[in-house]
Length: 177
Image (tube, rainbow, N blue to C red):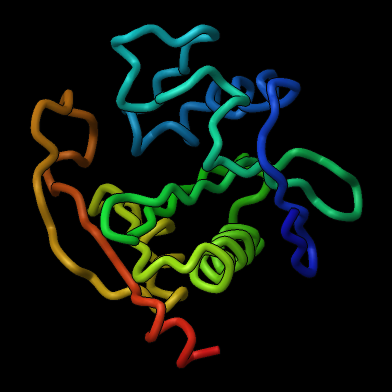
């Protein structure tokens, strides 16, 4: 488990499946992922872009709980890629937006990735128009690495602006801490 001033992050379990499903029924939460469509209760092969494993069994996904109440706020993910580069992701309930939870949870997981997992770098990406997510990445000290088009992605509002990838190295992170 990882604790911060206001959050408890713990690996998801199958018992979290209902919370994960509920989170992804909000069109605003899903806006920059699939245009706001609710996710299916039982994802199929056509949903592989959003789901790699059955909900609640993803080994790189951490449930974000408010420490004081135990309320499920969303999730953070840090999956290692080839060559010691991790990939950061997050999804929070709208009620948690604008309160610093995104940065707080992401910073804790980035720190864990560098200090405990020994990752060399961590990257994150989002749609170019997703200003809130980009702001979290920048606040983490991540640099804009590239802009790109996502091949084969169905057009959704804002997708014409493309995707952006940000990143930070372990040396950069540790130097600012």
